[in-house]
Image (cartoon, rainbow, N blue to C red; front, side, top):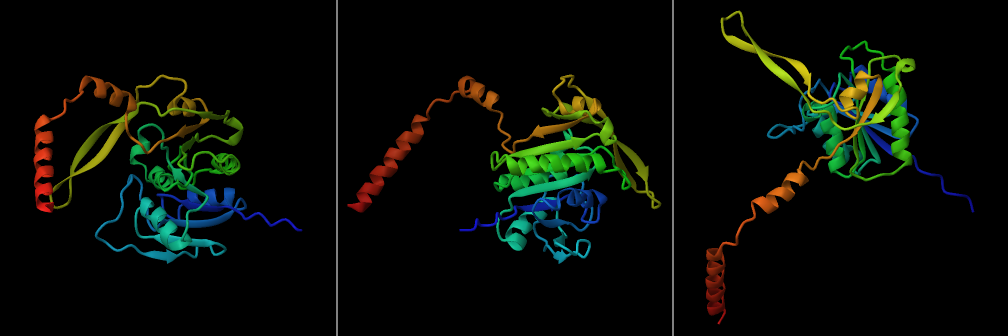
Length: 282
């Protein structure tokens, strides 16, 4: 009896830079032979949208002619909207893997909170779809994505081969160097780093004030297992991310330090309610 042909995995690709961005094209080209590829991505740039979803406005989904050989759609909503619509209206099922990116610019350290790229991947992980967000440390539209493509393919192959938790979510950042200069990858923690923000005040032609956000990136983490350290030393950083934001260490301490006594008045009220209900039933 002939063996049944193994079905190719379904891979959903999305991003936050728009379906027309070079980064998503680079990601598609890197993995297009690894499975059935479906693209659902924003119709315009959505950087910094975080985990925003569209409420109170209709969403539009249009077939894209940028990828004529596969199912590809542009969405009028956020990166998270794209994942939700892809599962419910395009695939009608959960894909085997979700890839987000390749983002134009880094998403290391605190950037993971603001990133539309990572929020799309996180939405997939919440829905029990293993997911990876890829980012290249170059904002330019003419950036060289060849090294990022190499690592995107390697990591995608590993994700497909080694089925880990269905909620697994990886944040992958690639240094902006030729492949020959990248030392490899490191499994890292998220660095404690942030932007020291400043708003520049200006006036429009009508004399009204407006503000332009600027800032300086500050790293407070000197650990050699952080994503910022790895990237500064020509390594690709891979950070496993959780969407459960509970601080379990503090939770344990609070359970001891803030131990609450039962409210006896509540128990007395409960007894009265039970007695009343018993009388009514009689």
